[in-house]
Amino acid sequence: MDTERGRVKSETQPDKGEQSQESALVERRVHVAAADVVFIKGICEASEGLCAMFAERGGDLVLSASASRSRELDELIQDLRVDFGALVEDDPG
Image (cartoon, rainbow, N blue to C red; front, side, top):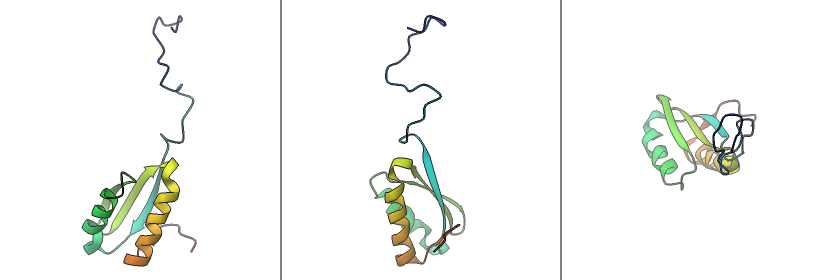
């Protein structure tokens, strides 16, 4: 019990100052042809909860995933580059 405030502190919740990698998010900005957006949305939905996709306008997309799955997200984006000619914002290569 948090005697200062008279509340029971949950054992399962981290303190506000602590942020686990599981709760942190990463996002990647990707541009694809507008005609491919719906198909790519289907790929994201079929990827076992890997990421959420937000379409900003036309083919400008934001893919957001848990930081713990950032490697898998980057692998998906690499596939999008190969299969759909996706361009990744701030992509060095």
